[in-house]
Amino acid sequence: MAVTASTEFDIDAPPSVIMEILLDVEALPEWSGPHKSAKILTEHEDGSPARVEASVTAVGITDDQVLDYTWTDNTCEWALVESSQLSQQQGKYTVTPKGDGSHVVFDLTVDLKIKMPSLIVKRGQKIAVETAKKGLTAEAKRRM
Image 1 (cartoon, rainbow, N blue to C red):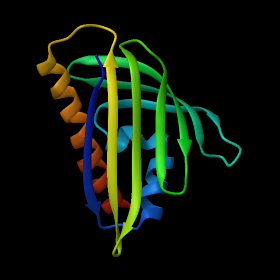
Image 2 (image 1 turned 180 degrees about the horizontal axis):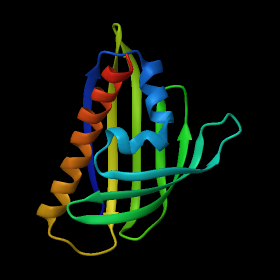
Image 3 (image 1 turned 60 degrees about the vertical axis):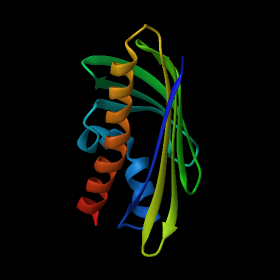
Image 4 (image 1 turned 90 degrees about the vertical axis):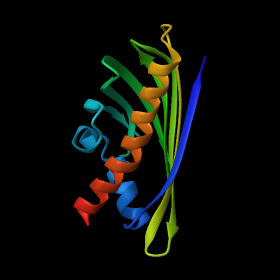
């Protein structure tokens, strides 16, 4: 059964900086603790990442994933192509201006291939949402 999580937060950096960070998917392991590696396999015509291979560890489980990314001026969205542990994953960052900074909405839906206690699934989801908020905020401060 798919599980969905969402969070909203503000960052003291303009949307262009936040989108620059998101476009730099190969740097994910630098600011997203669960990401152990990320490699761009193919790019869209504009040079943005299209297909990405990533290794992610959460709640003691490592998952090797292939994800397809789509981009707009203010969104970063991905969908699972293949995975060793997940049957579904869809994620999306939506970045909008807020004063001199940005308002970020992060949505994530995952469905595991294997049965796990809901407590562990919720813990993994909480880690993902916290990483989205804390990691992205810290990386934005570092790049400003």
